[in-house]
Amino acid sequence: MILIDETKEYRPLNGTPIHETVLATIGKPYFIDQYEISISASIGTALFPYDTTYGPSLLNQSDMALYAAKKNGRNQCVAFEQSMQAELQKRLVVTNRLRSALHEGKINHTISPILFPNDAASRF
Image (cartoon, rainbow, N blue to C red; front, top):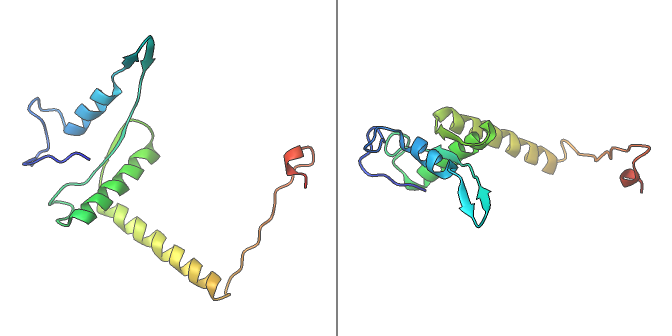
């Protein structure tokens, strides 16, 4: 987590957005003994007070943005958008409805194993 004070434009002194600076710094190769190690990062951002003024919500929103960044591939930065919250709410409603329907016996689930005739792993 990175907290930056007074960041109306959230840019460091050189004018580069902070997330680009972080990604570039993390992306530099490191050498341990004779081995070159390269890593990448996914970054999710949420801005106080623009996205929310409540601390736990700010963490949740940055987490949603982080998962969106991971979904987009490596070395990405995604800023929180309200549509992410709406999508999460839709998934929660569907999940809760399915759980209720299953609990009330309105639906049932069955497991159908997938068998391949020449695959030893699928034999019982």
